[in-house]
Every structure is written in C-alpha cells, then in structure tokens.
Image 1 (cartoon, rainbow, N blue to C red):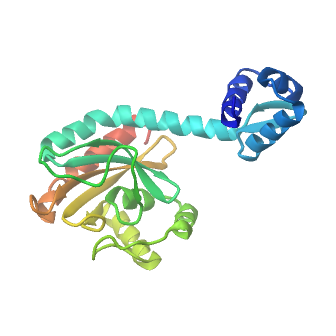
Image 2 (image 1 turned 30 degrees about the horizontal axis):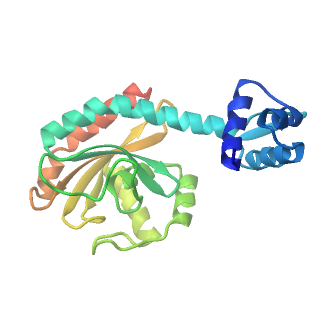
Image 3 (image 1 turned 45 degrees about the horizontal axis):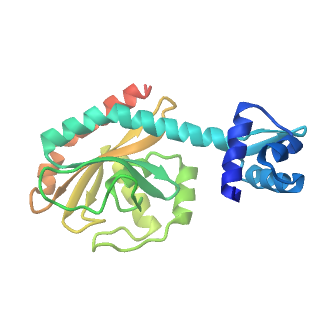
Length: 244
C-alpha cells in the first residue's frame, strides 16, 4: 500500500468515526510516526482535523462533497434545458463552472453541424475570453474577482482576446448592464457565443451556460436573437436550484 492508498484509506476510516493516531497506525499497519506524518499532511490540506487527540474529517472534505453534489445536481437540472436550447438553436451548448481562475465544462451538447470546437466535458478554458467564464466572473463578489485577476496570465488567442485587467473589468460591467455575456471570436476564431449566469439558493453565481455558433453559419445578430431563450432557461435552472 503506497502513501496515496494509505491517505485514501485513512479518510475512509475517519469518515465513519474519529480515531486516535495509534488506532490509525494499527488500522493502516504502519508505525505510529508514519501515521502521525500522514495525519499532519492531510490536516494541512484541511482534509482532517485534530480535536483533543481524536482525528476527524476536516472542512476541506465537506467543501469537496458540497461542490461535487452541487455539480451533479446542476447537471441533472440543467440537462433538459440545454437539450431544448440545442434543439431550437442548433448550436453547441456549454454548461461550465469556475475553478480558481479557469472554467471547467461539466456538460456539453454539440451542434448538429460538423464543426469541431476546442471544448469538451472536463476540459478547462480561460475565464477572461469565454462567454461562460465572463458570465460567471461578472457576478462574483468584488473580492473574489480581484483574487481571480491576481492569478490570470493573459494569452492572446485571437485578435479580439481581452488581454488586460482594465479591459476585462470594463467588459464585466457591460455584461452586468446588458445581463448577457458575449464572446465574439475571443477564444476561437470563427466561433461566437452568448452566455448567461446561473445562481443557487444562496443567490451566488455557480455556473454559466452558453450557446455557440460559427460565424460561417450565423451572424452575431442572429445569435443574439436567442438571447431570451438563453436567459429564460438560465433563470429556470436557477429557480430549480432554489434561487429567488
């Protein structure tokens, strides 16, 4: 059993009941000093906590569980809506969440047209030049926005890519004013996108949903004709997540 195996086994054990280091060492069949080092490492990552010598799950595990559960619920709730949007628009539909300074696609329906896009479920994309990324970022608290900006390393993907904090902050204000995020070939040449935020029961933005269409198939004005459908669908998903 390697270190990773022991760490996972330890988490499995203490989820059921708090244990002392000696008990952990016996259960993992390792020396007490090895068990102690393992506990300290996991404690540093907030996965475990030590309460008067008893080791129990830390808040980090709860945060992971909450995020996973939220993503699963979100996909289940959003799926019928993104299927409907895909059917009506015939575009590519994305559902994405923020992870630090990037977005992660958690669901996607491809366009019926044979167009290859960069995205795929599980793939990461920059937050500053994608419709879903900007839709989420625009509705984060100012403090969290600043934290994201501090981690950004701007890269120019196309001639339209935002490449500075100043540009991005102006864009976020524009998104809040028009209640819509637009990616006009900022991340991929020839790909246009409109996106909307999704909120949870705490009135916090938790995801973004977008419609993407290639410029060869549709103009930006034609894409914007689907704005109401997208916003109404995002609102309906938010409502099902408890947003009021």
